[in-house]
Length: 463
Image 1: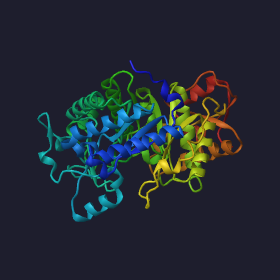
Image 2: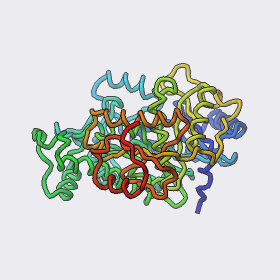
Image 3: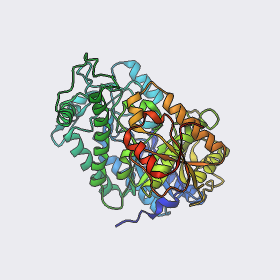
Image 4: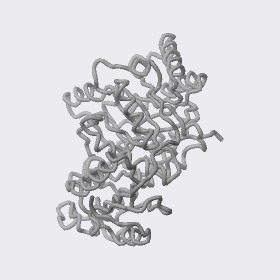
């Protein structure tokens, strides 16, 4: 059994695959990889997560080649004491409708190395057609389309997709020897109307005893006061949670798993069905991506909220938090290092994507990986309640709850106080503080109110 101890003090950065790397096993490609690994070892990097080959099912016809390329990287890195995590989208597949889509993909998704079939209906694996796995829009009864990615997506409730993805993961581990997997993107894109496939409809009816209502039934759709629509929201969260539970069970023991959370605190995530609060129990690392458009100057408040949430969740589960921070400025990365240290997280330093000219991590970090001390996080000195069920009942447009929550988090942060975030699925005992802030207390559900009463803490509803 492989040890997971390396995650506790990992110095993580990215390992980028480029179009030129497809010339592997050309000698100069291998030499370039060895030089990068030498640099990483010298500057103190102990783990890398891959970028490229991202929309993994797009590369179905090249799985053997990718396995061999990745095994070569793993061998090179392992010889230098560096762990390797394979990062991929388990769900998204590029799909073009026009020349304009191709232009957008070429300009916006090039870091994903987009190479995809022109015709998906002839793509199959073990007798299963990949096009049959797509999420279906309740509105159109056609496959959903995600404009921001120019992509469709597979439904996490589809049993054929589950079976083949879990099988793929075992193949990937066996063929490459990677130390971990970052299984990215499992969500219900792009809105509440995904997915209306047979499996989602059957799951909803089994859960509620009634068929999924017609799309023109406004007493149900986006009626956040409807208990039945709340069941639809919860079913989607539970479906993603179940999918990742299956991923964890499919992986060999000792292989690290993490999944991508991005801006989980924001209300728009109510539409997506993905929450690190739920899937944390299946993960070995609790991970949050600080979206590349987030900068420490313009978006610090949102970043602090994400940091407070991800590290609180990690502590509940006795696991390490990992934070993906984008920058190609070493001074900015040092600021990130200090934030991570204060909140007990480990950083994953990554270059800015979609930025020209490209400045690779080995250049930015050439003078050394910024130090982040282990186990020196600030102690929790207050609690802040942030209820997912209340977010669900308010919906994705109402920002009032998030803004109230953020105001308290930032006030505490600016006062040098680290808050513990109290969540529906994580109600801590043995609290090391005597004050809990509960914005919108009157709208919280009875279970959380009962919990707050039992804590004997002073409950404040505002600053």
